[in-house]
Length: 440
Ligand code: URA
Ligand code: CA
Image (cartoon, rainbow, N blue to C red; front, top):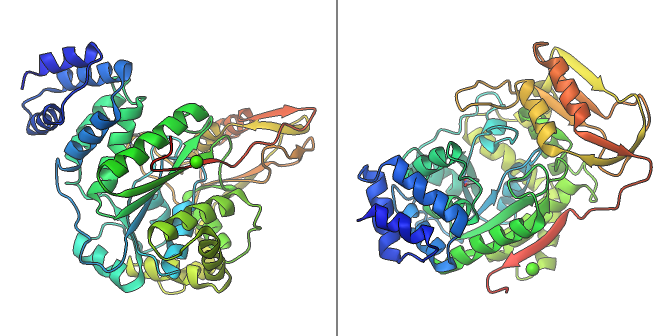
């Protein structure tokens, strides 16, 4: 393996063969290729891109770089769901239980929050007793018994991505569609589900800030799924404001429980995105024959309380107390609850999700670095959405804090996240597109 030649080849904009990519990943994981060569190659990819077959071959090589989960002995079509990361994005806690209540099988490995984005694992562990560190046999037993389980990614899954991602973070090479697509898809494939529904976020609070790049990432991942024989659908959704109203771990559990209890109206963006994700999960899982039937099943699971019961069952299987979701308010008790206002009124023309996520992080809801300890109860709840009129002096959000150290900074950050205008802004869609295999 002449890595110098491979770097030069990519720098010239030529394509690699699958054998070259397999050899490169194998040698990188074994330590024969040093980080500086990998970093140089990834920088060349940032400039030159990769052909779809190359991205597919890179994904396959990464997928098989470590342990893989075998779910084939579980009955039914196992469907995974993944979001590229957002603020107030509580969809997994709503949609996985609803899909399970409809007869789908969800065996999902999630991540922890980092930076301004939250992580499903941290949200689940804000419930007393819950631990997402369970082994694979137990994980599969829970899926078999109740139809869903969400756990942390095991240590030995896709070691190539662990090292490449850490390297990308410090070499300004995160921002490349083939590298993002192979990073996400290799982990999804190694986690063993038969089909994958992706929620690709676009907007100020997302990786992909503009719609064209989000669409391009979505297409690349859907094509990569097709390339390896795993049916994949991507929806492109808005991240120009938080998806839900709550940002923070227990606060987001409380919001998920509110949706599953039918307390959130159908126009609610979180409700809408959950229904759309759930619809495609039921279709890929062969639990519904068309969109209308899928929606009707999901609505029934919500109305009957079957979805909430599934979430409670999973929480119990992971160590939570029976009935613990009946009093989620108790999880959100903080020493301080601080309303946040603006001196001037106006229409909310823009709401920067990244800054809102950053404000919650300052209060202790998120991590600046992996080893930071989070406070499960803190965060914030928005009272207004983009397009709403905000009267002068009326609270647009409430901060939940236990400590005053960075409270003022969080207040100022949150205020800075809003842009007001005299006229109402143009309405923006919540869902931009659905990308399926074979679409041009
Ligand atoms: N999420 C991932 O897992 N990988 C990326 O490269 C970007 C987002
Ligand atoms: Ca489409």
